[in-house]
Length: 241
Image: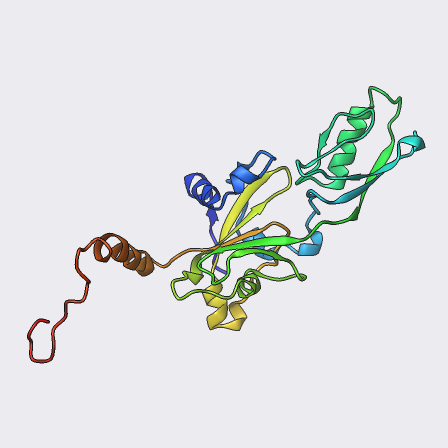
């Protein structure tokens, strides 16, 4: 898989286009040191599960069983529990949430020994946009790769730049990282189709080809701006018509 890391203005521009920065309630920082080749070698089963709104958690307080309860991650990404401050759970692991709860309850309990277990999970979705026939948000049917997500979105358009498909992912801690996936290489040779598996809330963005952008410019700023139809041509006799 051909991939290279994006960061800084290029990544921020793409995020602004698809609305990720505005929609996320957790602060998003771009990662500049995330190795692109780690995406292809990382196994989905080994990745830590990050909580999201709608997930249900079982909080088991061993030193105060009366405080044990089931919580749901709210739309703002937080959980609320008696004697503790509201805590951000979105884009964090259950163990990280448990550590924060222990710290928050330390002022009320002498030894807050507790565990947090995720018991139910909200929809597993990915977002597919750009040069696909039916862009949108899709449920993950299982472990799929970027090209399978593109197929779910109706496939590539003829203007798609398949060798530079952008994959954006939120990492543990709230960081946002991205890499470019060469989908076209795997389509030409199945041996090169080593596309990494997608995770919940990944974003797949398929850009336009350079020639497509040029044609779009001509159509918008040249042809559509002319007061007469753009239909001048020459017949076989050489006379203009």
